Image 1 (cartoon, rainbow, N blue to C red):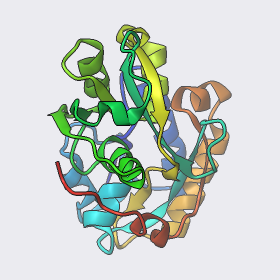
Image 2 (tube, helix red, strand yellow):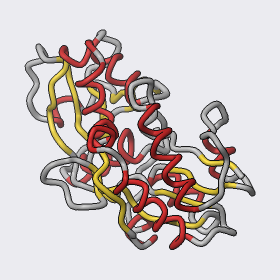
Image 3 (cartoon, rainbow, N blue to C red):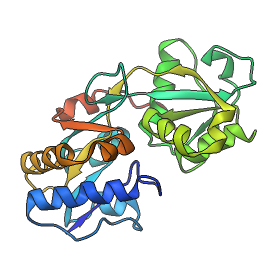
Length: 244
């Protein structure tokens, strides 16, 4: 069996993620000793021996739906956001005078990857609702790299997962050079998934028990308040924008 918690894993959160995993493993009474970190996420998500992982809503609805078991959604520490949901922040350099996201439509949106809900789909769906579209900018490979590209002048705007942005503001000096231009409407948060042979209710109960047992400091580090079930239709109902 393999397990991973890749979506908000960075050096400053790794120890808390490890403690979360030990709590999940204890609640399940089974599982690998350590999280898988070095493998390609797509290989992990589709691995026949997957026990539990976390993916993004866009990969789930586009390629994983029907092939994995949907476990549930995290309840993130994002004030004003509905439980089980999150949003993107659109960031620009602090000295950029443009105030409306539409003013950046032709500037080139830095995005982490084409199948990212927060980095590509959410901002494009928001723009479409207001009658415009963002021009694709550099594909950076991560939210952190997208934000850094804007801070360093390699792009003018980027869309970032709101929890990733919170972590950047805590740990990355370049975040001080950025400001939030807008928030996208909330969408279901990054889903926990399991292999098709697993019982999602059992995995969700183990996750809930592990999160509840975490020290408050770890929950704050991870921005994690709890977990909750969400039906697959909440994810699959979100439109897929044209690819970059």
